[in-house]
Image (cartoon, rainbow, N blue to C red):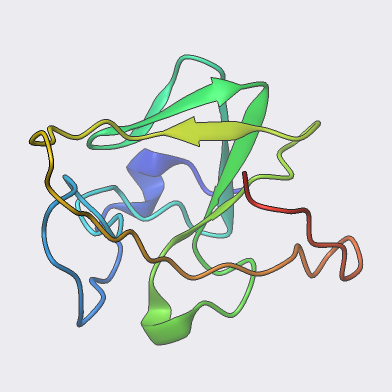
Length: 114
């Protein structure tokens, strides 16, 4: 695991997105190297918070699209959860899209998104 101070640069940005979420592709976060584990209550990127157990913020651990950083919700140890709050307007419609896959290190189990 690479420490944040040793990594020294940010994650790559995705070429799409609306900008409605603060740091919607984690490009403002420090590059975590292979991965870095964050525990409940920690902010791992601007606007993003761990809300359950742990998550692994990954750089080169998997093969992310376009070299972006990713979040492994099958943390070290245990399944984690994340949160990002945003301001909304009454009666407005919003569409949230994201990339999702199973943890390649633990088989191909994908849980439902709720």
